[in-house]
Length: 181
Image (cartoon, rainbow, N blue to C red):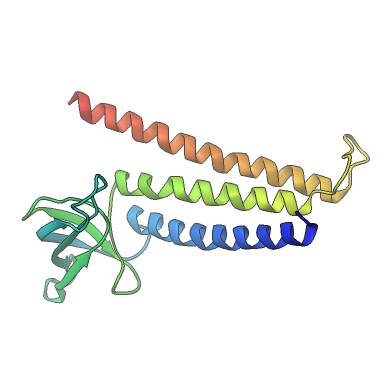
């Protein structure tokens, strides 16, 4: 593949990584309760929109009632894939726009945090590949600033991979604790 095609492919992957990173970080922050209106979502009914295959895809209808204003209750159609029981009450947050609702707590945050780590790691890998000089790299005091930036970008990509692995380990540990109870 030519150098120009490689740069174009890298730019496209970087752009998708940035968009995915921003979306996942926003959803994670909303689930963690860092912004948005807290409230409760009372489930009316959940149904599987994909009954013909093994992978279920649940959507739910219900009412979101903010904690600060009980009169501001709105009907919400959730497409988050969760299969809540009919009549269940779930703590949620409404985002800045009226179409974004996310459950709060540890599990929803873990469900988004691995996406943040993965997209950050891919983005830093693209930065490292774009900045690294071609050919033989030098080690020691005579390194160029491009080599140093490429090395640090690669190290931060490993931080993203570490976040993904740590998120998976915590999720597995929490699942085992719930299983034992």
